Length: 355
Image (cartoon, rainbow, N blue to C red; front, top):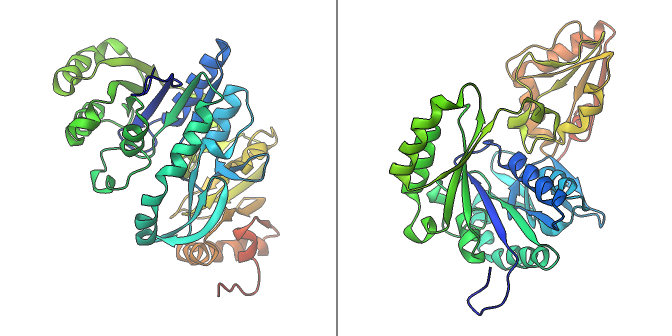
């Protein structure tokens, strides 16, 4: 591939989803591993990520945990250039803004809306740095490009793709239903110049007989003009990999392991680094479950964990609204144990202040 000036440019491809949690991160990780095994120098890239599930690079910077997993698939150490903009939600209307691994402060949504217009140079600089050391860069979008109300100043999806000249493949989740509509609808909402960057689509998380889906491929082609590049089967073991956000948490009532030591983790609305508990789930004598909002803490739990969060006061109020504070008090009276981590540990104090 070459730029307009004729200079060689590192090949790159961007996966964008028709919605959140369609499997972009796992597909990107799989492609990273595939091409790395072929002997190529591959690097992952996500311009903007919103996740409290963060990883630390060797120089102390923070990036999304998914990009750290993708770096591992490439066989390289993660760097801040792989995720130059990371938003870590705090409360209902604000996030900590991290640029190239360093925290700039907390911004309200309207403040960041204006500020992000200044971030494209940093995003392109990080992308260029990866291109300089790779044979292939596999980029990942955030959410969906169909959110056209967010298009002005976009650095996460088509805004980046157009600025960097990177072709795009759309990923749709057929398991949740509506895959045909989500692909056709996404294409219809894009501008002509943006549609020019689309190279095809991928149907993800398919279960059952793929022949039944074959008529849908022609419908997608005729309505959107996109070729279906593949139908990816359901991969149940994906749940063992670090999820990017809390949408990847196990469903209510699900437990990892069937051991006699029953450990319950409270599913905060803004839980952070929830894969810290993966080692517990791997223990044969442990049964680990996440207590969902609206559920009571099981009375036979041995240990209740208040996990990490960057929104301590808001989440403490959330705990009380669920009635978990009453459940925890009863749990302690029965001789049960409680462990707090990060913001969860702060909640166990006598007083919490946020001046």
